[in-house]
Length: 216
Ligand SMILES: [Zn+2]
Image 1 (cartoon, rainbow, N blue to C red):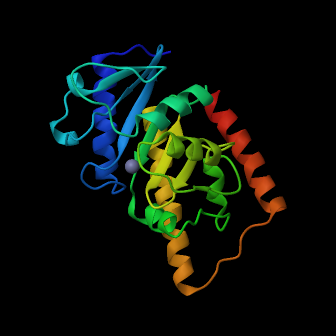
Image 2 (tube, rainbow, N blue to C red):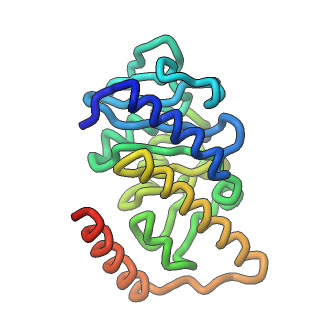
Image 3 (cartoon, helix red, strand yellow):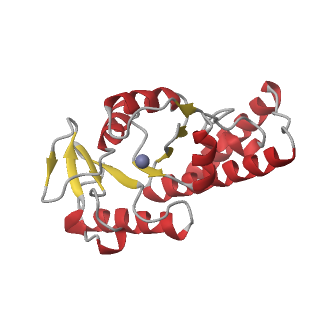
């Protein structure tokens, strides 16, 4: 497990800036965290990423108690709860990316209209029901939508992507936004056919092997 360090905090800031560079975030609406021994470190509330220094990153323990001078992102609850529920998750990226959020504003998840949906771990990317930002209810909804998945949309809000590293979580967030954009574009012309269970089983099996090959 990673210990809290200036290098990890700098990597969180770089990932947050990377969201904006990748076009999945504008301004300061998302947040980024990474698991550490006994808790996690997360971007602070209300500070532009370009002005954020490693000292501004907030460390929180497993109960959600913060240390340091800054207040944590208002969304710290779902970060805390995802780390508690999903031992394999080491980093979380949350963004209000335009296409994923447009679908989420229609209470729509992303079905298997494209095989790459499997990158999120299953045959769809669910949309969690709406709850006020920062609440325990939102965290509870998000955890259910993430069951068996590494990403979900949040109705009338945005998206969450989880990874085994900060780079992995950011890459998945970009992939989810790309899928959301393609789905949105396809919906302008018609209703795309959704791949069937058998077709998606094959893809998921290939992804499992591919992941194992990469990890070895
Ligand atoms: Zn948000």
